[in-house]
Length: 241
Image (cartoon, rainbow, N blue to C red; front, side, top):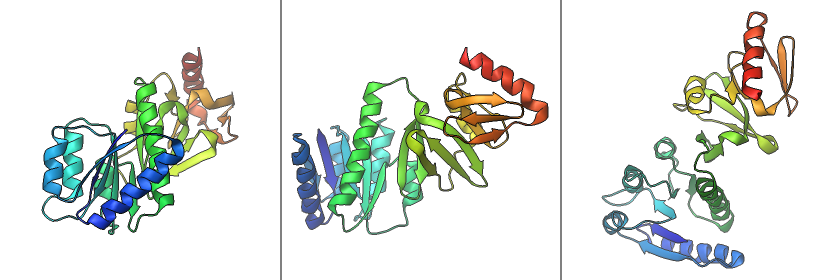
């Protein structure tokens, strides 16, 4: 497992190294850590080398962590990027670069552990199921990645989307470019349908349909307009066959 750290403050770099070693000693996993205090040297390195995790400070002299992340994504590198910063002003830029987590300084073990846990889930999903559709969900707590098979249904409320996932997990987006119409193009057409304006539903999680409503396995009831009931019911039957 290969890690890259870039932070112009060497004390922060050493702290991250210590926390990483503690996390992986508990899991009995060997890791390799490459670190840079000079972002120019880091930029040169990532053009020739690949890492599983990138831990990047944002505000650095000259080249920023945002610049480094852009270079990583421009190379079609889907590795885990974690931003670590004193500033809360860069969340939107982080989400646009599909950054998995945004940690505020000073970093503590709990913060980093949660970020690494999510990173492993993300990498495992990428390796185990290349055919799965992964949806990046930008929330106020960071970027979450959900497989299409884990989405029960999505509802739209004003300028945000509410993702209802398996195990009763609910994620609300911050304002983003995501929309139900865009998601309906990305998600598998044979699994998702729109029973009512503002909803996108995974048919695998529909418990039953009755006149003018459907009930999800989680118990949520979603209305179906009278005039659309026949079309929705027929579409559902086609998808579950």
